[in-house]
Image (cartoon, rainbow, N blue to C red; front, side, top):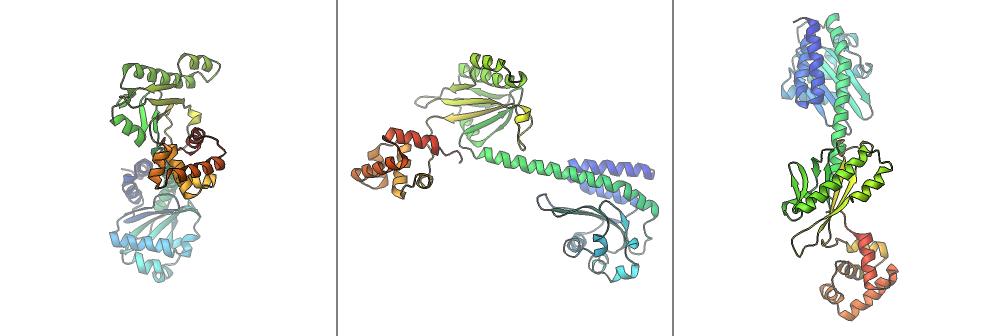
Amino acid sequence: MTRVETIHRAIRHVYEAALEPHGWTSAIDSVAEVCGAHKAMLHAQAVEMPFLAISVGFDGDEARRLQREFETRLPDWIKTIPVGKALRQTSAISDADFRRSDIYREAIRPAGGFYGIVAPLIRDPDQQVLFSMGRDLGKADFSDDDLAAASLIVPHLTTALQVRNRLAAADLRAKGAYDVITQLNIGVILLDAAMRLIFANHCAEALARSCDGLLLTGQGVSAARPSDAKNLRDAIATAIGLNNSGRDVSEAAMRAQVPMRCYLARRPPRLPLVVRVLPVSESDVREGISAGTRAALFVIELDKPAGIEPIVLAATFHLTRREATLAALLAQGIELAEAASRSGIGIGTARGYLKQILAKTDTHRQAELVSLLLRGGLQMTR
């Protein structure tokens, strides 16, 4: 294989590694082979990206010693090399000075090396990436052709790392976005243009496992009753169709034909599930959510107890701790006498608390109070 062919192969391996993290060792080995290096290391540190340290030709202790030198006391002659430039160490420091340097005594000599090529790939406050190659002690220095080959490959290393960073950042954003959706206390389901399932949060999965109203299948989402399943499919199709129609005047007509809200019956005495279907266009998709999402379903349990935190009520309406506890119980549909018993107070005291709660919330009846609390205090996360 000619040197040109080995360079092309190394560049191909570098870009493959950007998409498959396990390929970095093979990529660095290919670059070392092109330049006749016995050892090589890619060392990347970043504030918000995964740490990367890939080495070939070093054993574990040797690699860790060199990493430590790069991280804690990078030589000044390396710091002055321009980003993106491959440089022979002999062009920056004499052999005699190199032998006296910390990096040689602490890391290079124990690894049995001497001559090297160093290339800073990225250097900014948030990220430092360094590529280095070396030859064993007693071997000749790198030639001009070796350096030229390294110089051809270095820009591709930088580009591949930038691709890696963008993919890693996208993964982190996706994880953050889906983590938020996962914690919601209502069912959330994302579908693509073919109504195939992209994502369902824990709440939606739990509802589907009960096989009582909502169903999740390999094909997408459905309902226990055939008539409900048809209504749900029609609502989803309508929502997805709005994207294709450009959301022009035909949207109103389509809304009139098929509502994008439907109900899924459950076994008595359970109340039906409410499913609201929203269209999601490509421009609506936020970073972290699958770009293929074209419909979002929100599944609400009408008979699920309201998860209203007393501490939130106390802070919002300036209630005392006991008033907030009583208000939270009333919001769950519990009668005043039962709420008083659970709170460990008498019914007369409870009526006094209720009077104070009504005044502080600017409501006049218990039903009005509960309506206010349900509208403003519904707990949306688990």
